[in-house]
Length: 609
Image (cartoon, rainbow, N blue to C red):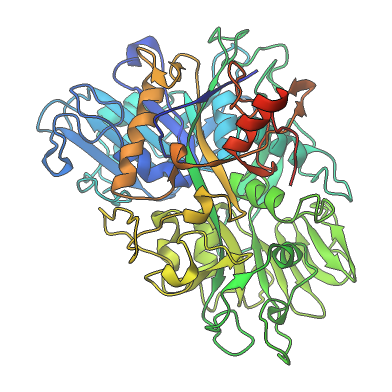
């Protein structure tokens, strides 16, 4: 069982996996991470001043501009950096990367004294790379540079993190060799480990018409979930992992990060902040029945659910103007191994209100039909199911899978592109977790919608300095403003729980690296310290909400995962660690839970959306 941990000093971050390799790396490589994109910048910017940095750009000065002897190098996803799972013939997980190192000298190529690395991939895949355990009992997920370290020495960095000094002209071989092949020791994730395990379990379960099983198995090593966008080779493989008990591939081998495994103690999950998912639409079509029309800014959650289940597939189903001509939507959805997919899935289409529907269905007359990845297109649709690229034969609407936040945002922003079937992509609608880096490619090409009238970024849609639905940019530092006029997002309706699509970000790590008592990090708990230090990055780049600023939580749900029960516990009750899933939990004020505990001794648990 996981030991939940709630920090009193908020830390805001999104995806990372930290690494303590063999004993010789215990001091020089305090941090190696793989996870989702929201925390990519925050971890890079975080950390207190000190001679021995824990992933900090301020090792010897509190002013970033004056920091010396710390170096960084970033690369977009180019196939030259990946996460490997050694448990079998498993596709590598490719993503963008950030590496930071200290030398203690004025020369970036001198021997490093500390190194941190972050591989940006799906959060469920990041969880797998952290929990996967080899037959030897050692962690099976490692960072790899398949092109070799010498080639990276001449590859210029791409300055992917704001506020950091300019990237180096290459990644020194001493730094590359030190982290190449080293195991991940933490994962920043936008969903709890229990929900990540449930997500891959559902993906690998045999196809069911109710979408309780999505058919990307059989496991433990399943098939690739593929993109339907032309010109890309993006795919992600469904592969099982466990968060308790034995590894599902190397059976009879206890997972490393458990009391029975290599660590000798349970993993720790640290809450660091809350991130909001935006509903995004392309703005190129400004005709009366186009999503770019200036009066279209809001969508109700019921309508949004119908859009992603194929029951409302025309632009006029969203735009509140009578007499509009029929024009098909392009609906973009993520892969089921994505934390973003699961957050959107269980907070919009697959709720009790929507009769347990799913993004993995399409509309057939008045009903819906689940998509079998190994089957033919459902009735009334043409195209392929994996890659998911379907077209409605009557409305002309498209339903297309995109892989990763980058492809989602770039496809929403694109004008004149086509899918694998050769169909023109227009009037796109999709979703992505907000960060300045995530939405930057869509500025000027897309806008966000309020949901149920609640603005995700500002107190109200008219408080947005970029205009209603305008995506904000950050020329760091861009501190959030607490009063009007607002210069950066305030997340007012996320903090209060009024906006419906959000989830808590957390860092999942080893019992030693995340150890803390009442929010005070234990000696040597570098991941705990880094998570707390990351809070300071909000002052310069407010990508998300500090955990201590939230007044709401989601009810935690009891889950049975691989035969192990994880009871729901919210973490608000004294001496009762946080446990269970929460991605599909109803939001409540934290005070409501405390009052219920005081009145009747019971938590507000197992209350689903």
